[in-house]
Amino acid sequence: MPDSPCESAASGRTPSIAAAIAFATPATLRADRLSITTTSPRWCAERGVKGKYSVVPNPACVGWLDRTLPGWSAKALADSLSLVRELMLPNWDLHPEMLTHTRMIDLKTGRPRPLTGPADMENWYPGRGADVSTDELTAYLAAALRVLKNCGLPCAGVTTPGGFGNGVEDRLAVAVREAVGDVFGTENERDSDGLVRHFFKYVRLGEDPVAAEVRDVRGLDTGRPECVVTVPAATGDWFGGWTGDDPLRDALYCNVDADAGRMVELIERGDPAVMLCHWPGLYNHGAETGFAAFRRIVTALDARFGERTVWMKLSEIARYAAAKNSTTIARQAAGGVRWSVDRGTLYVPSPVLVDDRLYFTQSNRGILTCLDADTGGTIIDRTRLAGLSNVYASPAAADGRVYVTGRDGRTVVLEYGAAMNVLASNAIDGRVDASPALAGDALFRRSHAALYCLARPADLSKNR
Image (tube, rainbow, N blue to C red; front, side, top):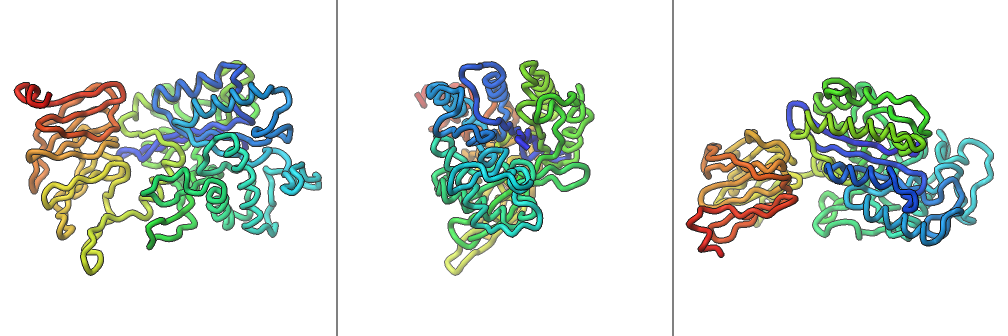
């Protein structure tokens, strides 16, 4: 399926893990046909929407994106790839959706394999019961990834077209890890992180589990652990389908008031909510009825659940799943680990150490834990901070106070002590993801649009 999973993950009783969207396209954005191809990613960027975007390296076997495409001038192709880098890369993972999305390619000749049966189509390859090695799968995925690398498009995962890989799921995760590693190495990884690859393949409906699954875990006892995460979709495609001709059934995702629909059900249930859609279903042969419905759904969900959802790319969701699956906080002693904890641990924000106490928030949520840094003993146990939901900024501490800021700009000020005593709660305008900076007697906070300096009036002149 040339799909574009729109993933939104959120939580009912507690703040959500993430929310995301993913688009798939048969080739790339056309710079000479500016309409939904540029308005949709820009609209999403304005609202912080993130996700995954698929690019087919050799669409329908007609030409290669890193060489030439029939009907495209060299300039048109270069400009279109530039648009993908400009509009999609900041907020979207880029995936190959294998090589052609139609016929299998003979890697020795670079031409379509003879069509002898379903297994010669990517949507059916290799077929259940087929004896295909991990090396063969790896080579095919690597060929697709290499084309995107030649186009200057970094990738940390792949999307499987339709049933690609069915019957060999036990080998697919290993092939994804090896293929991404073979083509991109560690160039897309931060130095301090393990290697987390991911793939998008499965659709989970009804009561099926919808959480991301961590597979092929290796090297947990080393400084560079590795794993592969599969991030499933949690809805059907209820826009215009992969042809753009299917009837619109957008209310199945979410109704006008965001009190019914699959996305609402998942959010209220506390499950990750991954919306599945296809690019043609949003475009609808130029009518863009699917895109209009998509905007309504995102707006309605944000209005009701915005404080409980965090938009993420699939790679970020994969990292969250890997961290949740494997992370512990520990203090190293001379003879080994002195203590460790694996409940209520952090994801994006860093902890703050104040004297002999370690403060940190749970995942990206406004839930605070404080531990005795020497013994690991619990001082404050996973207690919700009133008014805070999503937290990306690390907490700060000064002058006997601990400052925790949510993404909506609200800061809760706590008194340093054995109990959680809230001294104040106040807000600045705009979304805040950056950690604070302390200078003298002033606290600096940066939103997405402005920089704030917070200090008593008498202290401002001292800090100039």
